[in-house]
Length: 276
Image (cartoon, rainbow, N blue to C red; front, side, top):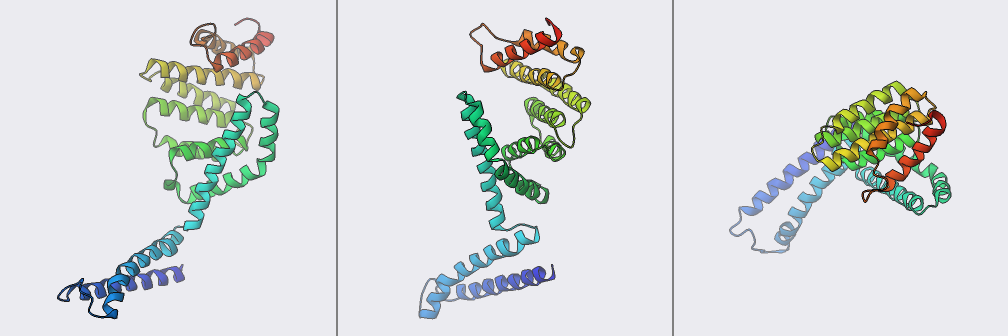
């Protein structure tokens, strides 16, 4: 750190010197009058040297004092973009009905994903203010997939402090519920249920009717899926399955992909618990 401080002092002194030379040049009868080659060098070189000096101060000293550098920043940004691109490729295969192909691609990319997520999380811990909301969503999602659910909850809690509006709050509580319910170091079904209850409370205050219904459907769908996946007693499942049946738009012009998934859950629930 002493070396960094010495370099910072040296660069500041150089910037002050450049500013003084620039001021002396301005005091000439005409600043833009070039009387000899020395004046020409000062005219062109001083502003450029000043900018380069300030850039060097930022890139080599300021970022490094904060545990960063321009190369690391670029690496993290590029890594998050790669994660989003990998997600897109997997989603396209799944949407096309190629579930086996999507799983194979995901398995082949596992090491790359783990490396990119590890680098991004480490950088986030040092510089949380650097990340945009969409980047944090990507980071939290992949931490959950990798079983690093405690780290995922840490990221979601940080996003909670900046939540804007009921929809945003409902979405974040749903993510927190997913983190607690996923296989990982923070697995806790009771905490997951509590988070999903909070998600529903927030979703019910969304003003736009269509958005409110969609949010409640997604949260309730995940609640049923979570309870069935963890083979919980029917008492934990059936009340939410009934709500999901009421929310389903199957057989209407509003039917969508989630209605097909609701039907799949309904069949599993029927086999285990009888009719809802």
